[in-house]
Image (tube, rainbow, N blue to C red):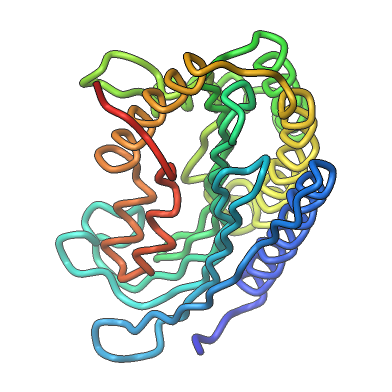
Length: 287
């Protein structure tokens, strides 16, 4: 068990409570589809390189009628980065010790007309402390209405905290969720933010302000994504639609295995491999 200070405990408690509410909502959608699918939870422990306690997490996974595969993970870990990796992490250049807690979610839907989605928010501490995360919509068959509603809800979440956030963070998502070797974006965007630094009083945004924004991102996701699922989950689809979905999933897998920072961070810090790779789709094709 790693020791947590008050800020770390607050962040961890919020991410775990958000996990519980999201999973309950997704199970409720399965009930609406006459499915008894439910999340199964697998705890895991991390051991730091010097065999000190390194925290751990819980992997949540459900396979259902609506959600072909959805993973909702929470983790709280700490320890020391190896020297090479430490040089790439904010605030760890001269001190490799770190702490990280967060929630990570990826949903792959059974119906090709229902959008896949990714959401992640996290709190990290090295010699600096910051929040990061975001949410982005990944429809194999995009609908303008869904894209507009998703972005509108995230825009509203940003507007309550900083009028510059949505423009900055939506542009960041557009740049980040891009597959250079294919020359295409992974989905229809959302928001992505990192290094939202918690500065000492009088030196920048304090913990409370950044934590409140991160909570609002979680609330926005919980509000809008289930509405989009219910809108599309019963749409008739063809074999051609399914083929399009599977080919799109191949692109999604390529991004997550080659470019995704969260995948790299988890693997380089001794995270649970199954939890880290839960983002990969259950089926995919490459032509």
